[in-house]
Image 1: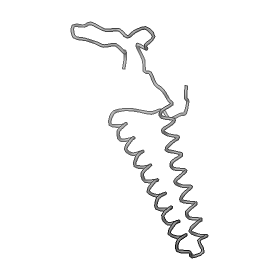
Image 2 (image 1 turned 180 degrees about the vertical axis):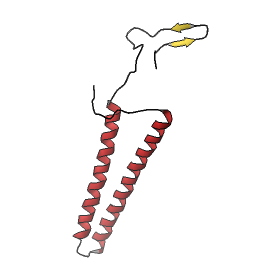
Image 3 (image 1 turned 60 degrees about the vertical axis):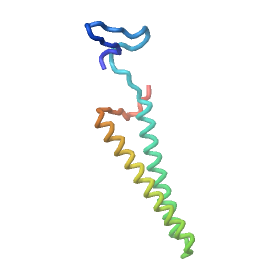
Image 4 (image 1 turned 120 degrees about the vertical axis):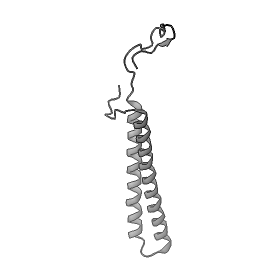
Amino acid sequence: MQKLAINIPGGYNIQPPAGVPSAGNVTSNAFPAIVTLLFGAAILLALFFLIFAGIQWMTSGGDKQKISAAREKIIFAIVGLLVVLLAYLVITFVMNFFGITFDTSFNIQ
């Protein structure tokens, strides 16, 4: 995007109002940083639940209800992890399809 102006037929240009950037790229690092943080938090949360459910399973003492509760938590944690990874793949595919790039360096300005 070179200019934020409209080119109309006949060679006429409509210039942007004063105070609106007219050249260069207007970028913000806040959105990619937030998305990266949310993906990281979701992955850490799923891993926490996997570890927690594994500890619950080991300390169940053979109680069928505790084992089934721990098994459900493990299944939900794995499904959650797969959903997060699938969301990441879909977002990456869409961004590559449309040529969008994110700078995830966390240099929010």
